[in-house]
Image 1 (tube, helix red, strand yellow):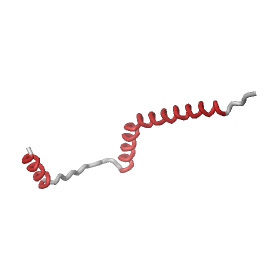
Image 2 (cartoon, one colour):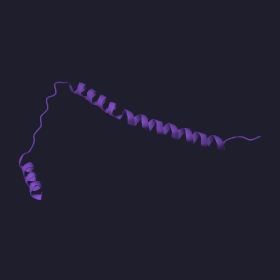
Image 3 (tube, rainbow, N blue to C red):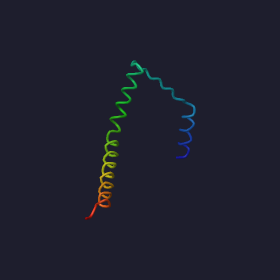
Image 4 (cartoon, rainbow, N blue to C red):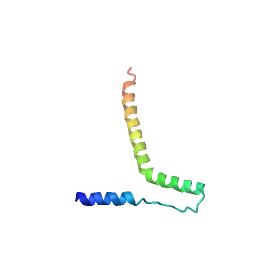
Amino acid sequence: MKEIAREAETISKKNKLNFRFHNPNTPEATADYIVQIFVAANTGRVEQVLNQSASKGDKEKEEGEGENRCVS
């Protein structure tokens, strides 16, 4: 098993991969597309953080209201 791993390692060292991509779009269109992907990928995370901060703010508000009541 170790022999196979060594052989694979030597093969990967000998064969260096070279990737080239052709992008016919303008840099602005490419940037816009990448931003759209990032926004779509992180929408759930943003909503989760907003919900957590909103619930945290509600708890702090409720705790603060109890301390500042005036009793006559």
